Amino acid sequence: MFSTLFSRSSRLLSLALILLVSGCSITPSDQSVNWPEQVQALKQVDNYTVRGKLGYINTQPKEKFSLSLYWRQQQRDYQVRLTDFMGQTRLLLEVEGGTATLIDDDDQTYVGTNAPALIWQLTGLQLPVDTLRDWLKGLPTDADDIVFDDKGRVAQLTKWHQGQHWTLVYHSYQDVVVDGQLYVLPLNLTLSHDTLKIKIAISEWQLDQ
Image (tube, rainbow, N blue to C red; front, side):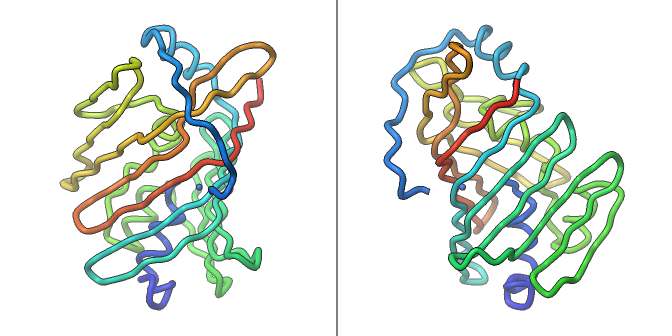
């Protein structure tokens, strides 16, 4: 679907991501972390807002575009909004309780019992969206394999989900200080599956304590 939903498949997948510009100059973090302490700190981050850029690249079929991303997480509920350079909403995904609602730029509304099932129904992709809320902040929940960098942070994770293999690479992190507490959070990431790559550049983290 992203040629008619941008074709529809790609746009829906983009939104599902789950998942951010940078034109802002953010200095990547060189901070080392103690992994057990990092896990505890990240688990406390249940409510957050992320702003940034999402780049979509697929070689088969050949498609490439960039959108602004807004991701608002509150416990297990979340809202993901993708907008173009004019500020027009291209896709909106809202998950609340047992209901997932997706609205495209033609104002077509799709409703499902959960986001993974809705995305699979519309795109054929088994996107592990339920774990993306943790992956986005650097917590490798339910990952099959994890690779750490020399700073003790997650550098890469992989996940087989319903027969599809996903890889998430963390290229860099940034320091975010809230009420005197330092959080080391992702800055640049790439999620990939087969011929598809989704690049995420996070320009702003807002943590609600």
